[in-house]
Length: 319
Image (tube, rainbow, N blue to C red):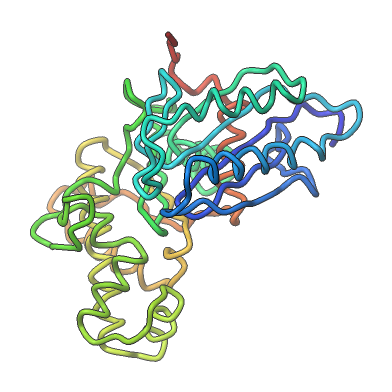
């Protein structure tokens, strides 16, 4: 593996940041994957220490003679791809933070001078599915992550769609009918406020569920608990309606879904598909909804795809 060009992949989210070296086949270099915490209470100094730490640790695993050809960063949104700024909703201390420049400076301190590309994490995970995952050979795709938040990305006619700011595909913040979730970010009708893992649990707790985690809710669902069943059904249907709207707009062929809460039960996908099957447009009913074919490495593979498959991305003019 040491002879192949490597990408330094960085995935920044609301609970953790990870980095690893990834080869041109989408395979992580053994021993290069490192993780440190982020979170709502982290300060700028905390976040910089975590990001800098995983970057340095990953690069320390670079084999002798190997070459890093670029750094790919997938970050929770919203972002500003032109200026390299990030404002992840679940990390309040970072608003218009220059993450691209910060990681470039860490790399430069280690004598690594290569291109650094920043995109929204949903874009990265969609590129990973299209490259080595469930969307191989499909050119009209939405990737989704259902976890602490809900993110997404788009490939249309074989090209990645980012939009001018980099936030195209932000499916977690479309509004879903009359279903009301928690008043998150002042948007109780947004899909994320209804269907993310924590918000599904919060709704269930309001109905009498005594657990506190998505894992506990999944266990209760498996045991036939009525509130857990209602919560999972509600979430699945909300996601299904969002997918139906996205498909009506973009004529999607496939939606690949990963993230921790997407694994709560296979029935979650059943509830989504029931919404699609009942849609009045035949071209919407054709869309396939499938689980991610990638392991937890998917976000890092996606960040590496920003380098190894950069030809799929639109140009990014910079200041």
